[in-house]
Image (cartoon, rainbow, N blue to C red; front, side, top):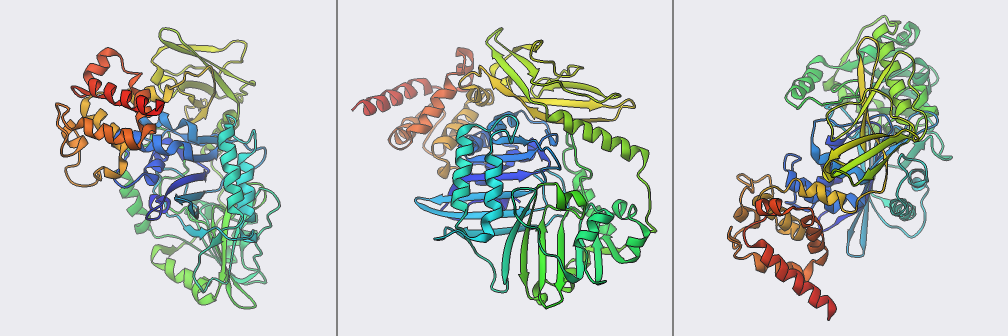
Length: 585
C-alpha cells in the first residue's frame, strides 16, 4: 500500500486525507515514511528517520478512523508524535467504514492528484485485499464523477465529526482540498467506458445500479439480505466468494441458488505462516489477521458490457444502507471486466466450498460481538485532560459525559505512555483523575480504554482526549527524548535540514551509528566540517534551524553533554547569531 502513497517523481506531498475503519498506530507510523523524500526513512525500526519524516509530514496528513477501532499494534513510544493527524470519527448510525486516500502532490505551482480506494484498513493485517488507484490533474470545470468524493471531504471537515474536534487549520485545508477536487480529470485505460465513485451514507450520492444477468460477489462478510442487494437479477447465476464461517451461517435456500467459493487452504495458510513471523500486535481488534478481505462486485449486463465495483462495502445490509462506504465503479467490455474474466483471474486462489448452511451463532461469538459493541459505544464518549506543570508534570483526566458501561463489563484505562491501568470508568469533570510525576514527553492525549467481561474476555481501544493548557513544544520534548547520543542527534539534524542528501536506509551498512556516518564525508566526530553544513542551512533553511532550536530547548545540561557532538554548541551559537544578524539587515 505504501507505494501507492509515494509521490510522483519530482513532486512532494501537499496534503493527504486518509479514511479507514480500523487503525493501528503502528501502521499509521508508516504513512509519513511513504511521503518522505528518498532516503529520509524506509523503516519504522529507525527511530531518528521516523521522527524526521513525521515532523515533515504530520501537518499535511489527516487520517480518520471509526472511534472504538483504534489500537496500538506493536508497542512503540514513537507513535505519540502522530497525535495531530489521527481523528476518531463518531457516527450516530451505522459505521464509518471507507478505506480511501485523497492525495495532492505539488511541484512548484503544478498539482497532481491521486485517489486510492481499497478494502484494506490502515493496519498491519496480512489479508487478501483489492485496491483501485486513480491519478489525475486539475480540469477547467466540475465533473460529476467527483461529486461523492467532494461530499465526503466536506463531511469529514464538519465541526464535531471527530473526537476531539478537528483543529480549524486542518478543517480549512480539507475544505480547500475538496474545492480543488471538483475539477479533477482522472486517467484511465481506453477500454473503461465509464468511471464513477460511489460514497454511501454521506449526502445524496446515489447507489450503483446492479442489474446484471450474471454476478460475481467477493465479500468476507455476508448476510442473506445483503447478498440479495448485489446478486444477479432475473434468476441469473451468482458466484459468491467469502469466508467459510460466513457461508456456513447462510440459509440453505440461498446456498442452493448460489455457487460458493473460498480461498484455497494453501493460499490462506501461506498468509498465516507469513504472519507468524511478524510481531504479535499488542491490542488487536480485527476479526482475523489473515484470509479474505477484498470486496468486489462484478455484473454482466443484459444489454452487453460489464460493471465492476471495488471498495469497502461488504455484502451486508448495513454496508448498503447505513454505513459510510466508498466503492469505485468501472464499466467496460465484458472481455476485460466480465464475470468470466475476473473469475478466471481469481481461480488459482480459490476452491469450491460445500456446506448445508444454517449454522447458528455460537455463545462465544455473541459474547465477543456484545463486548465489541459495548467498547465502541464507550469510545464515543468525549474525554478531556488538563496539563499541570507539577513535579514536573501531571494531568487531570475526565469524561465530558457519563461513560455508560453495560452491566457485567469491567472497565479500565491508562495513558498510552503509562503501564498501570486505573480500574474504573474515566470520571466526570467534577471529580477528575490526576496522574502525576511524568516527564513532558509522557504527556499524551492517547488514552487506552479496556473492557472485560465476567469470564475474562478483553478488548481495548484508544481514544483521544481534548487537551487543555497544553505546553508549547510538547512534541519537541518527545523528539528530544529519542536523541540520546551524538550519532542520533547528528543524523536528525541532517535529515531535517537536507533530507535529499541522506543515504537510503535500505543500503547495506547504512546504520548511522556514528557522527561521521550520520553527516557523511567531510564531517568528523570532532566537529570539523560541521560549520560548513550549518552555514549552508543558514542560507537556505531557516525553518529547519528553528525546529532544531526548539528541540535543543528540551535538553538539560546533562542531556546536552551526552547527546550533542563535541563542539556543536559553539558552532550552533555562531550560526544562530549569523541568521539573526541577516534577518535584522
